[in-house]
Image 1 (cartoon, one colour):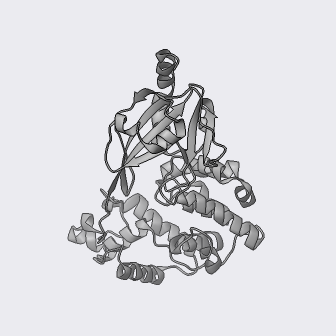
Image 2 (cartoon, one colour; image 1 turned 135 degrees about the horizontal axis):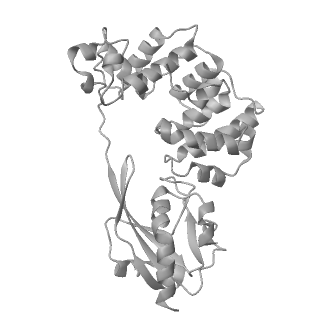
Image 3 (cartoon, rainbow, N blue to C red; image 1 turned 180 degrees about the vertical axis):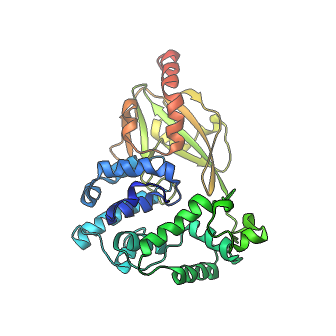
Amino acid sequence: MGRDLPWRNTQNPYHIWLSEIILQQTRVEQGRPYYERFIENFPKIEDLAQASQDKVLLLWQGLGYYSRARNLHFAANQVVNDHGGIFPSTYAEIHSLKGIGDYTSAAIASFAFNLPHAVVDGNVYRFLSRCFGIQTPIDSTIGKKEFADLAEKLLDKKNPGIHNQAMMEMGAVICKPANPNCLECPFAEICVAYNKGVTNQLPVKEKKLKIRSRFFNYLIIHDNVSVLIAARTEKDIWQGLFEFPLIESDSDIETIDLLQDSTLQELTKGNIQLDFTSELIKHQLSHQTLFARFRWLKVKKLPSTKKNASLKNVPFDDLKHFGMPQLIVKYLSTHLDKRIKISENIGKI
């Protein structure tokens, strides 16, 4: 029996689409509260389209891969502007929406409209590779076609939605990545991997992820009441989120050298008092390792933001209203009150 999940008990394409986007690169347990939060804040796709991107990113905070949230907002506007607010009902039209690829198009088409398109996600790749003993790498061009063709061949054309959900559940509940529950698997007798004892060797991947290291030096420029924040506008991680002014370096640098940086000098005119330098904090992303330090810098008066639309001076109490990377959210959750008290005790500049 499949898991009782809210997006399983509906054929509403908006709800199904929302769940599929949230569950990309996200576990069900983590994604479920986000799904419920989005439905509560945006009951209809028109509500999502009319919302500001800042609000969408704030609700997405903590899920990572923020391009999903930006694409979600963009696609909602596509549905409203190009389809009169009615979610498209053909595979090709669904596929044309921003951020929707082959897998998501097939999932929405079959779950919402019972169209005969096979879904091939990580769970299905794993189940098929083990059951049929397929050694072709799942992340290769040849492998993707081989698995897609096999999934289409196996698809129950009369009940594609139920069939696809069953295939996904097999991978998620029984044919798990580690310690699969082979003894309860209804396909154990014909499973090539199980009978040959190579379950843990499948599926095969050919590409190894290259991990990049980056050093982030955050400047918490404040006057004890308010603080300077900046929007990430470049096409990089966390685009559209807010953070503190950032100086990125090739390696960890000394605070005394950082204080001479031209960006910091331009922001503060040199009128700063160093309150505190944090320890070096490691933050792991799927494809990057971030090393961050937070420097608390007190000023008499916060710099003007009139000439730079990406900068804002906001009260510390209002930071919770801005979508920020989890790296910063976690740091502030344990250091904000403590650092303000220390700063107040240092005395006036």
